[in-house]
Amino acid sequence: MKHQVLFNGKGSWGRPSARCEISDLLIVSYKTKPKFEARVTLLQAKKSNDKHSGFCPICPSLFSICHGLCKYIVQTNFKANLEQWDLLSRRPDVLPYPPFKCKPDILSGAILPSVGSIGVFHKLKKNHYDFFYMSADMAEPLGSPTQKHAKLKTKSGNVIRKIKGYEECVFACNIFMFSTALFNLKIGTPIEKDNTIDVKDDLYRNSFRGWIRSILFSHLEMTNNNSIIARELLEYLQSDQEEDFMREPPATVLINCDDHEV
Image (cartoon, rainbow, N blue to C red; front, side, top):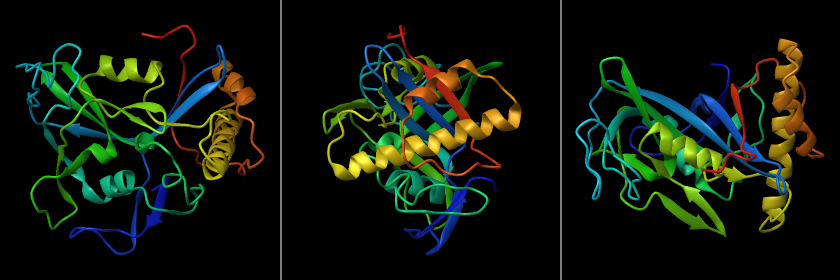
């Protein structure tokens, strides 16, 4: 209930006035060398009890949905909340539901769709789990569901696409490929000040940097945590639109990618 937003729902399962959590986790990947660059994604995590052997054109596996350096999206499906998926994939304007705070265009203003993402934890075998990720827009409902709790299936296509000059990883079939894409700044939408595509993008990035600043300051103040990485990132998040202190800031992961390209 802490990080919910209101939006206009869509689909046979959706409510005209929908309300749900925006995500489980805010992930910020950044580097400072040779210049500051950062990507952000709002990730909704799922747990699947199904076996996900799936099918890939080049790397089928009996134990995982992929094997090796897969270049194509694996065909698989999983249980999900379609209202939540609709929010992250369609990315409409939202209204924050108190005490949560955000701007209406937190999703809709992003130039890259992977600002909204889904991650699925699944069991491979006893005491061995794995994870696959997708940009939320690379999933679609399985069949013709009439209720919001149903299955999503992955769309076909390449795992990397290019939009407005930016490369974006839209699918990672295991935790290694997911972490590789994060460290290479291929997941999420850019928020750095440089290389904006137009005025709207510049305003969006400025606003998002201010939002993250508020989140980091709130976490630091509430936990009395002198986090080196959080304080370092704050130095690079220049913005004139900082939000107020948040009593319940979203869970956040910061990844410094300097000297870690893989």
